[in-house]
Image (cartoon, rainbow, N blue to C red):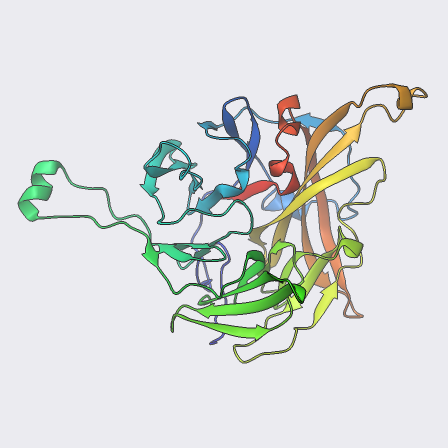
Length: 382
């Protein structure tokens, strides 16, 4: 695996990037009676981040989410089948609908477009979506497909017929992964050419088995690394400052902590060294019921990598009442957004740095009916 710094948002990171438009955090919520809403949240950038408080104190004031920038009518309970591709948010759960294509909302142009539908749709649980070198990859327990960037806009019909132009935009099938059942964690190597995935298989004699594989895009081959898994719950991101993958800890006993894992080579067969953060980012206040969380890589600021945590939680409004046990359950649901960076201290311990709470956003009542989007919040930085 050649070592080239990689930008997790899609491809190898160049030494100097041109000035780019300001990015935003987009949340996909299952909070509309007919389907989903996409809402935008501003995160601090530039001098706003430089002036961010570093103590990580949570302001528990509840804010109202901005109106939806887009709504999509689709079956409930499929929020895990939304993915980001460039500046577009795409809904891959179209195999059980009347759509013949994949709808995509372009957040930059504020327009609805479409992409071809993959040969086999994503699974309800355990699918992985990746962007590498401008291409989109769909990895399930049984299939591996790639969608290249969209071709240029088609010319007028007469010109296309005259010049015999036939734009080809379709999914390409890659070698299938080993026959495992669920993808539990995944990451992209720093070389920008290797995908690493930990998968589970249930064996009736040995119970649940966890194994880690990698796929080299240059050779189109899978490699088995060992009967162990990446220490993450879901996606791990490469942090060039730490020279390590970073993700949420998958261990129930360390829930709320972050984990940094060494990036291993192609011939590695042993579990990589890992470090757990000293601080918790959630599961601290016993009055709050943690539902789920998602980690998003939001680039760098002045040479320091930044991450955003989106946490789904509920609070029982009966807790302050002396009649709590006799009152019906009354839950309100929130999304809490926090930005931070990571560092190793002088003792080599993993610490949360420049920790800033952005806001706790109260969700409409309907958001508590379909809980998948709270168990694993869907958030994109674009």
